Image (cartoon, rainbow, N blue to C red; front, side, top):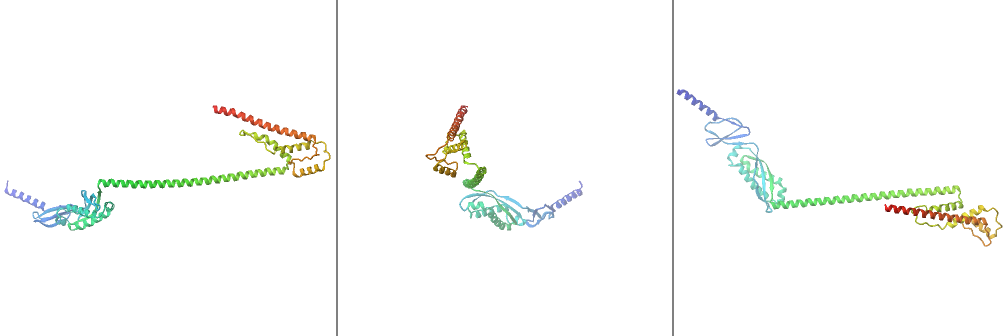
Amino acid sequence: MDPVVILLLVAVLVVVFLVASTVRIVPQARRYNIERFGRYRRTLQPGLNLVLPVADRINTKLDVREQVYSSDPRPVITEDNLVVNIDTVLYYQITDPRAAAYEVADYLQAIDQLTVTTLRNVIGSMDLEETLTSREEINSRLRAVLDDATGKWGIRVNRVEIKAIDPPHTIKEAMEKQMRAERDKRAAILHAEGERQAKILTAEGTKQKDILEAQGTQQAMILRADGEAKAVELVFQAVHRNNADAKVLAYKYLETLPHLAGSDNNTFWVIPGELTEAIRTVTRAFGDQSTTEPAGPASPGEAATAADDDMSGASRIPQLGAGSTVSLDAATAADEAEKQAAAAVSDAKAEAEAAKSSQVPRRGRASGD
């Protein structure tokens, strides 16, 4: 091969190598630290950059986006001498690529160890109860300490979060028992409040029911009494309007006697004491109607007795003097009225006994069935 051609090929290869070594393309959100002969020269920005092919070299490639770092559970002792395991999550961002590359050897390890020591200082001044309920305060104190320490490393800590706080197993069991007891207590209180409200409402309902029933009974009694009063008043007005005398009333009294034993529920009945007085009144009425001849002259005592009878009414029993006489027809009428009354009483008794005897077989058949 011709030496000239070989030289040209070598020259082309050298030019290609030099061009490739000179041009550096940096992606977005990336930063490259350039060293020239082992010394920091500059930081390449995103885009096309030119460097010396032999003198300059890339030392570190850094990502300036916000990063998330989750640490492993670390044991921490609380103020009441309980060991708890705490997991943390760290959100950070590189703000100065030169400081992140040259001010600290491993910034992730440095942040992790700083987080652990800060946690132990913060948690060591709190008891378990306060540790479990003060996560926001712990996060704020951690972020303040880490942001102050990592500022010279070219790193900004945006957020620190406690992911989990795991107390010992025995403490977990005690806490579960305490929470269960609190829930049972609240449930018992709510149950008691419900029963109290139910009893109050039931008592109020019973009270209102009794009041309404009493008012209804009162109104019914008032209406019933008004009805009975009006009925008595109408009967009284009808009697007085028709001008009924004692004879008619006595006859109606005797006519009502047979109905006393008409009910099936009556096992015995009583003859009123006014029966003889009513019979005498009817007898006297029949005697006055059946007399065809006028009575003989009466003595002065008989005239006085008759005047007293007229003044007291027809229902009063006549007083007979020693020398007074009663017509034979009047005595016969009185005996006849007494017999009729006795017959009416006997018929009423017979009807009552017949009704009673007719009910006994019926009841026996009902019980046998």
